[in-house]
Image 1 (cartoon, rainbow, N blue to C red):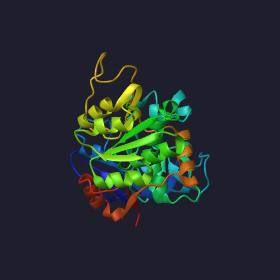
Image 2 (image 1 turned 30 degrees about the vertical axis):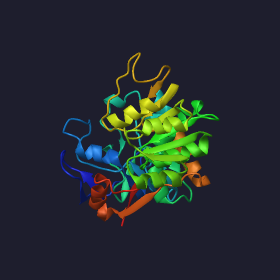
Image 3 (image 1 turned 135 degrees about the vertical axis):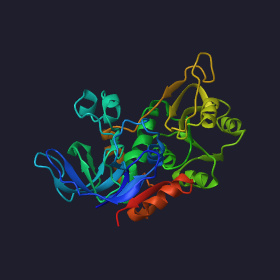
Length: 346
C-alpha cells in the first residue's frame, strides 16, 4: 500500500510502498477514508534530529477517519465495516489517566517514544492504519469522512480548550479567538454551540475573517496596531473574559494580554514560538489564569462527533488525493489553505 512517510530528519516526507499491516492481539486494522493535514505535521517534518523522541521511519497523519477492516484475535471492538474516527494521542494505556480516556495527559508521556498516531507511530496518510487498541476508536455513523477526520484534532483540541474556559463564559461575556484557521474556525462554532458568549475573531487574512463570520463570529477584525483598543471598545472598555490563541506568536500573545479583563482566562493553543513573561505584577491583569491545553480526551471526542452529527459543526475543507500529498504539504506551508486540508486515498 502507499503511505506518506518521514524517512529522514530535515527532508520532506515521501510517498512510498509499504506492506499492509495485519492486526495481532488487541490491534485493529482500519481502512482509511480520509486523513487531515495540519501545521503539527509541518512541525514534525521541520524538526531537527533529536528534537522529538520519534524513531524513523514512520507514516504521518494523526487526524484519521475510516472503517474497521479487521480485528486482532484478542480485540474487543467495533465489527468490520463500522465507521470510526481515531482518538489520536495514544498514551501508555496503563496509567490512571489513560484508563479514564485522558491519554493526552498520560503520566508516562515523557517516557514514550511517540505522542500518538502519526506522531512517532504509523499514522493515517496511507490506505490502512494499525490501531493498538479498540479503545482509540469512536463511532461516527454516517458522518462524512472528510468531516470526521479533522474533528480528531482540530475539533477535539478546540473543544478541550473551550471546555477549560466554559465556566467563565456565561451570559454577557466576551470570548476572543485569535487565528481563524483549521482549529480557530471550529472554535468559533463550538463557542456558539456551547456558550452564550459574544465572539470576537482576529486574523491577518481577510479570507480568514470571512470564514470566521460564516462560522458564527459576532465580530471579525484584522490584526493591526489598534486591534486591542478596537476590541476592548466592543466590550464597553472592560476587556474579554477569555482568549483562545491558536497562533502563539509574540504578537498574538501581546494582543491576548492586552485584551483580557481582570480574572480572565487565556488558553494558549498555538505553537508559534512566542513568549509571554508571567510575573506579578506584569502584563497579565490581576486574577488571570493561563492554560496550555494539549489535544483532548476520548469522551470529549465523542462529544465533538455528536455536535458535528447534530449539524452544529461544519469543517471547511480542501480535499486532495493521497497521491497529491506533496502538493498539499506545499500549499499548507505557503499558507494557501482555507480551513483544513484533507487527504483521501485514491
